[in-house]
Image 1 (cartoon, rainbow, N blue to C red):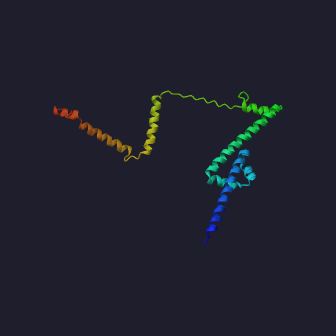
Image 2 (tube, rainbow, N blue to C red):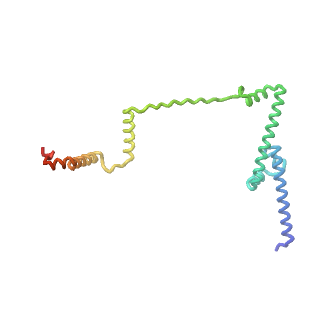
Image 3 (cartoon, one colour):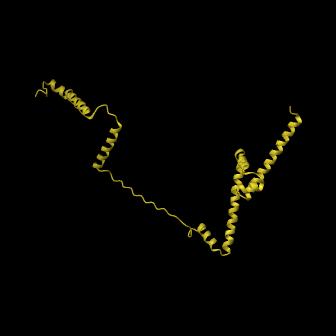
Length: 185
């Protein structure tokens, strides 16, 4: 059974460990501002890379602070590099001058231009083209539709329906009423 004194000691150790971890995190964030390379910052603060990445996953505030410090460090290095480049230009270094002009002066910048030309013809299709398209679409549709009867059977059925329609046509009935049957003639 743990004693109350033992619990207090463990609690004190955890608090001290948490304080030390927080100090390490702050030191690492400060180092990232000066040296925006994770490996170097970790070596200089005595924190392992894996520990750094674990902290980033577990502590969102630390992750945001580390990210901001990395960006600030990148700006610092960019300023230092630009300062050195300007110093080299002042010392008549031709390579530095060319580099500066290519990246900072539109007249000397390397440009890649892409020219796209499109031509759209909007003439209506001729009757022959429309018929050819319709025929091709019909062929495709016929392949997809499973017909219950063959073409001959369909033709016969349609002819029978037309004959029935003619026999039952209203004009034919009316002619019969007048005493004339067109089939009798």
